[in-house]
Length: 164
Image 1 (cartoon, one colour):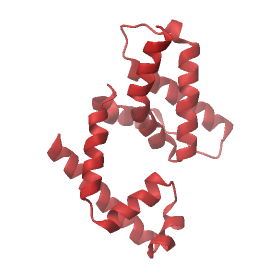
Image 2: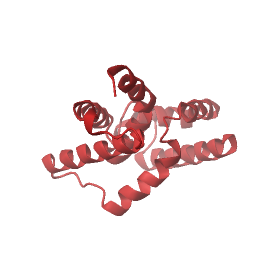
Image 3: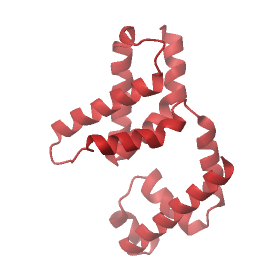
Image 4: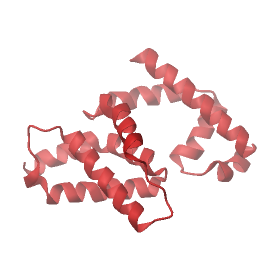
C-alpha cells in the first residue's frame, strides 16, 4: 500500500477510530493519543496488512492493543474484558467503513436538541469535562447533569434511528 492510499484510509477512518478509542478509555486526550499511536504503528507495519482484509477492523485491533498497552502502563485504570470489547466492536461494526454520513447525521441531530441538553453534551463530550467538573459551570448538581446526558443520548439515538 502506498503513502497516498494509506493517507486516504487514515482520513476515512479517523473519526470512527477516535470514537472507538473514546469508548475504550473515556478520556479525550488519551483517545487521541491511542489513535495517533495506532496510525503510526499501522504505517510501520503496513507491509503486513493484507489488502483483502477490512482496514477498519485491522485498525480497531491496533487501537485495542494500544489501549491494552496503555492499561498495563497505567495499572490503576481497568481495561475492558474480552466480552465487553466484543460487544463494543459489534456496536461499531455498521460504521466501520468510515461512514462520515453518520457523523453528519449526528451533527444534525445534535442541532435539534434543546440548549440545556446541547450544553451538557458539549461540556462533557466535546470539552472532556467530568460531570463533577461541568455541573457547577452549568448550574446543576452532578446527578442532574448525568440524567440530562442520559436523556440527550436517548434523544440522539432516537433521532439517528429515524434518519437511518
